Image (cartoon, rainbow, N blue to C red; front, side):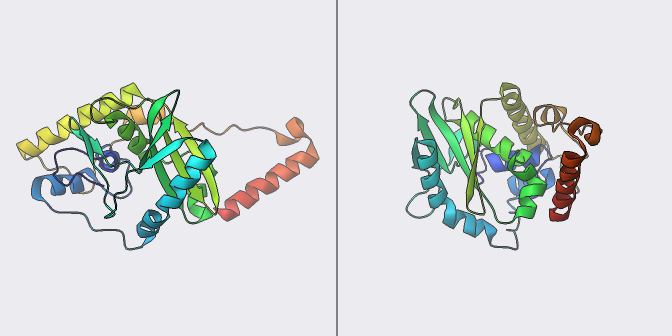
Length: 241
């Protein structure tokens, strides 16, 4: 949820500020903060379904992880927005570990396996925008102190997948720098390019890099039978994609 007072960059907006969000660009953020023009909602109701399923996912996460989970969803459906400097967030929930203390818990719903394969690497790696969102939630913490850990809880087809994360101090520093630079641009009236800046932040590529493919001779490495099975799995994966 964006900051209703526009005093901070929210955790979901940060991915747009860094140029890695498919939903919002830096130009769109400028329109919101400088001119009060809100971006349109998606033309589907998956977001609504995600909100409806959120309590069930939090309940399941508490059961699976054997930890206390406190939802941030209020009786009227709103969420409490927490600010720290020029950054803010509205977490789905806080999660408490006796050893690590409080952490940030963010739930995500994936409604088809095509998205799971394309955007979540088959359930192995979250999209960078979600990684950034969780890291900022950890940075904001309770508003005074950051959280030392966080978890993304993904639901897809009845299965839960958990991604546990530690702080990335270099990324947190980048958050602060980008937020300050953005507010400076607003004060100076420097409107960004409407089609987005052709940038790919090197720090993000370094932190969220995916390993490159390795070319092997599968017959020599595994034998003809296993190599044939591997080839069939590759064909099946491409078909599902």
